Length: 209
Image 1 (cartoon, helix red, strand yellow):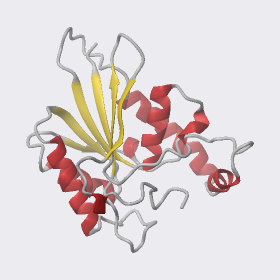
Image 2: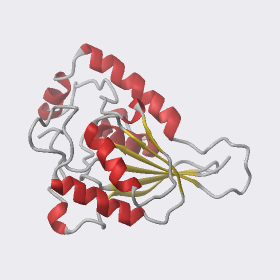
Image 3: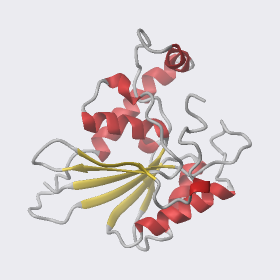
Image 4: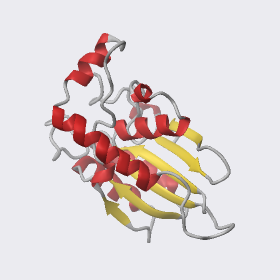
């Protein structure tokens, strides 16, 4: 079993127009954020970059990958923008309950199914039969909900604790999965690569606001 180091990032800031459209691409600020993240990650030996099929994530992955020559880039629905868990709103603050009520029955069924598949694909050590191998590093360019869920999963926190975990655009979260113990959350929402004017508020525009 080989240690996996999973790098997670939310896509760059998207265009202000058509915020809910899957076709919304990156704003100029978002493109700058993505390029700076690429510079931050330059030189790290990534095995792959995975990204959501939505345009804002695909564009972010392309800009980041420009600093990672030779690293394969894959689009996958597993990194998409899904409701990760059909969370029971009972006992939650009213704002969270209102947010959860906005999802359809189909989204409440399909989102957790896809998210469970993403957990199976992206987490845990790599079962490759190798011993004392270098860690496998992968980057997933995704959306706020999946990052929140994977952080909750790594910490073995209650399922509802994915709510309220907010990511900056191109903030970097890193989780280490080894065979000797539980996952290690190495970094959460790290924006050291972004100047202050590109960090925003820390509250995703498409998450509870």
